[in-house]
Image 1: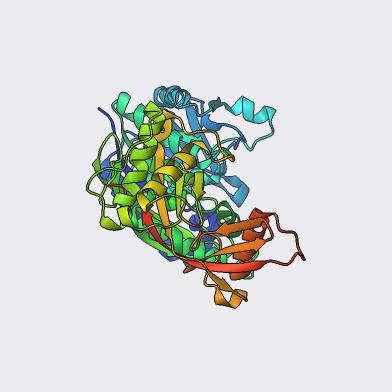
Image 2 (image 1 turned 60 degrees about the horizontal axis):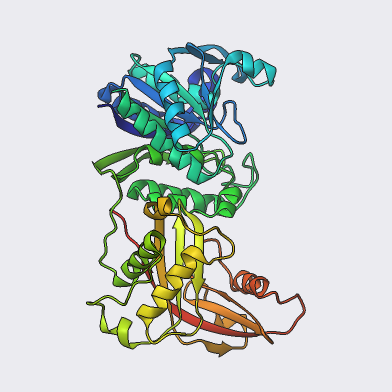
Length: 457
């Protein structure tokens, strides 16, 4: 049975290549050293095939693109180094199997030939997103075939599923494979950066590397789209595919090197998989979350609303409180319903009621189907008693949620949400949710929550 034997993240600035950068290459010496170290590790693995995911090939809006020619070749001529050429045999059998597995998972994937590129005026040959990492790998190891994949504009869920398709194809064909996610981090680290400056660029790089070190798939998939856009990066989708290739594994990562001398973050890293299982298993140590899971799974599968189970903590059976149940799927919101104040006899009943509503009654989404249940991640927020406030200065977006009211209209926003960094922004979103128009008078309340998370192993 084949396996993913290694997973690496490489940056791809051509200046790393001495034939391109010449004396300027010294300014990225840490990145060059990191790329050589990662390449040594790949050589020790001795892969039959390297599967490389790049942002700079023939990118399509609605499909993953797999290079389909027998020989994959390219140079860095457009960067002033026409003599720097690479050429590899394409593992066409594996490429076909990946497309077959992707089709089973309803991820659209198409083969791209060089003549097709000419038709659509796409740059011929391999792109620098592939050539730069493979330039360093080839210095240490040459005996491998290549599968060249360009990620798409599909959702992160589709990219993650595509990674699972790669894993299944590798296993079926008995390959020993290494995955390389090619991409640079933020392009907006300094004022003279290629894409301009944004303070969230450095924040993104820091958060990305923390996620890599911890092997935090949920954290990666939960990154807000606006945050990614502000960072101006090109490594995210490649990394999501890589994580999908390791689905079901316990992960940890190592950042081998990182620097950003030109305002673009260059990260070389390795992701190691430890224990792999067919499915992630919920650690049910939190009874609040487990009750929400059991409730929705039972309701979706049988249509039956469960009774309050035995053995719950006393607080869940005796205390009344408002509760919000939130569902995410591959990092994207899949449903969220809650009550500001209690509407049932206790917290347990409040969770049961709102878990069913979050999964089947959120008007923004279709009802959850049984096939989705294993892909959901739950959180349960138990609300404290709201208290009136008169100014936004009394808010703390990490600690307090906010309720806004104007007559019969009201809107609520929970605390500590990704991308909500100021009280002004928090209140503006709550006003929009309430349908309160600019200039219309309103009152505010704040509240604290105890948030219960679902943990995965």
